[in-house]
Image 1 (tube, rainbow, N blue to C red):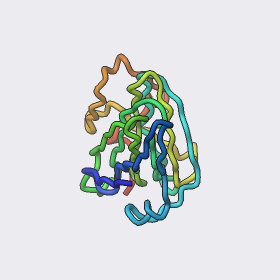
Image 2 (cartoon, one colour; image 1 turned 90 degrees about the vertical axis):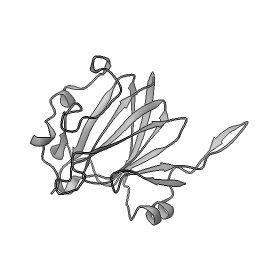
Image 3 (cartoon, rainbow, N blue to C red; image 1 turned 45 degrees about the horizontal axis):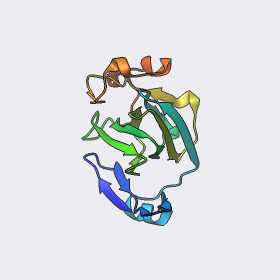
Image 4 (tube, helix red, strand yellow; image 1 turned 30 degrees about the vertical axis):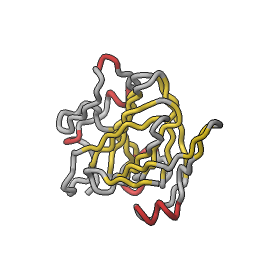
Length: 182
């Protein structure tokens, strides 16, 4: 695998080595020993999967306090714009984001450490999105930041009128009012 650092320390793009032939393809999606050598110790405890249609924007989500989660995300089918926002209050990159296109074609993954809000926008007719997490889901500790927060200024490359958002995401708070990591 090829590990590519991003503009924000701790966020990594991971490109697998894909072996293709007339039958299809094969690649290793996760190899704990190699991952920990490149990025650090991790204990993923759960895999999650979602399916969404074109224009669905999920995020920007995170869990607070001891329930924060690191994530390793990828797309099995379709294409998304994936975004990680640094919400570590004392970080030099607080409020900045990394965005990367993840697709079934490029087979890229994004590692998002604890202390980040995360979201993605579906760019294809449909997308199947999967991710590993290193902590349990705790609904009482879940939080969201507005996808269109002007202080973050994410370029989603799509008109808001084409986006489909949940009520929870539309009711999210601005970064300046969010409970962040110290």
